[in-house]
Length: 372
View 1 (cartoon, rainbow, N blue to C red):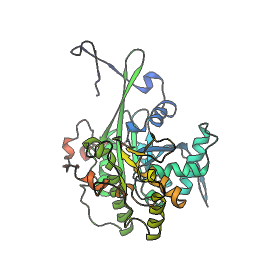
View 2: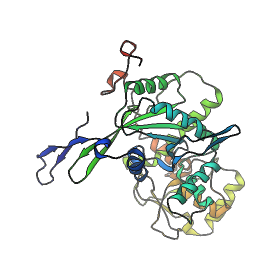
View 3: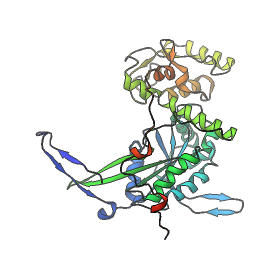
View 4: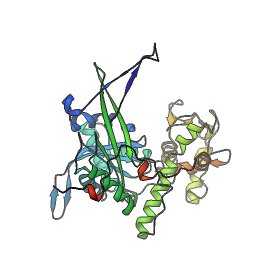
């Protein structure tokens, strides 16, 4: 049971309890309302997400086609796909549907993904966007090296008002025996405020992001390599947010692009020569922001904010005609150290909570299981 208080700004000691509501009571549905909220604000689930498409249902093979409808497909800034399955209330099959969708999208390539995103943008009214622009927007979103292999291990996010014990049990079991499958369970709650409704979102599983602390036995070599690369990409993608929160780089500080060991020597030489042609091209400053902290003097709009990846790609596009393919967090330096290393200095180790510490989660044990 969730609770939400409304507190008066004029009298902050005065609070009133808001009545909890439901989608059913409000006569709202997940495809028309819940989906719209998350598409507009994906950060309620994860601040790293970019929406690729919604209600996707075009699955084909040599043997036929299927019409399973995926609620939301997103891309994380680590380069992994994220399948988001929505339910208005508790559903005992939600995890099975999501696993099917994850298997289906695992065959996507970056080219397919760009085409799917382009189709979605056009359906939403952006008739002028091109395939190249759709592809570039995806490249700019990923804050690390990105290739088709990383799309083969999608993450799953389940979103519902509540989760039956069968779902919680399965999600926890899968996290223990199938370490390459990452499933999150997020609950949302509605609160009636009279003229409007407040909605809260909370991830209940896993309790913490424990990817870096998990110890597991050896797996198939290729799968392990991809998983470790995704884990590293996630850490690199979080570098800017960590530096922002820690205040580790002062506003106005000069940021330098160091390509040594990150690109071929001829590419490094070509990009460096291009930067030297105009002093403004090397004038890059830090202006603290959670995702877009870079200000580039050579930009058409000198006040425009850039993420490390988007500015890396812009410079490479202008210098050699194609985006970079390395981790941007490794390339941008302050005081002789790259953003990834600076961020790592401010990461505190976390401990893993025991299953018993997960409050409010109805985990089914064998003696309580009833088959219907």
